[in-house]
Length: 343
Image (cartoon, rainbow, N blue to C red; front, side):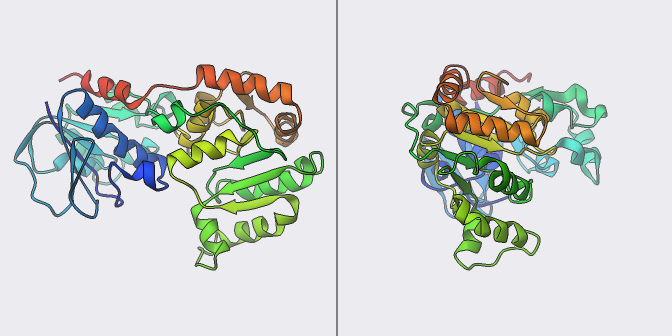
């Protein structure tokens, strides 16, 4: 089949995940085309990449490039408006990556009615529940895959002193986590380190501009340096896998609006146990009591973090379970699921 994927958001391409940090939403779109190509399809991508290139046999073209006249399947990413992409297509698919409430607002209902045969692909049960009820019959759950950097990572090699990592956005209760770390966790594990991977906080650390609403979180993180807190720039997949290998816990506050938790899926695949609050998406990523802990309150969060940082047996048991059960599927399996969508 001739498959065309379209996205008009940010500049990236099929090489980006292995060479630069990339958000989970963009990484998913970057990863599927090559998997479809490996399954024998002719695949083309049109997005905001900076220049034309071929990555793993897939032609990536900038948004302004000449467009094909036809394809067998069009995969529109995130925006229903992209279902109107001017190409003759036998089948159109909408693949969304954020909570689906927006599908029922603005011009989207009319667009989706115009493309009534287009399935709506979501990441899982939590994600499906956010789609308006009127569209529920069109929803298909296809969980994202994991890149080989995480699925094939070397065995864990925890650093000494013990280390925890956090990958949450600064506005998703990172200030809460920093306070809990300085008040409850660090006093019990006095040499422990907390590494915050955040591009925007790293920019602030280096003197760059930070949005006003994020500045209090930056100042709180900087003030916590004496408690073992450091700010680091996110890394490309191979280097993030190494950061997870060297840690003892992934501390994940979670948020009600998250529908997949990509970094949590990645760290679990490497073998890093997590401590997370009981938001729906975190329950889909962590097996409570086996690959980490889903906790009900602040005290339980701190206690479980301390257990993983201090108790080698607790850490190793959850780490082994995560490596054994959470390696997930690769993008080839995801490509097969897209292939199987009704035509």
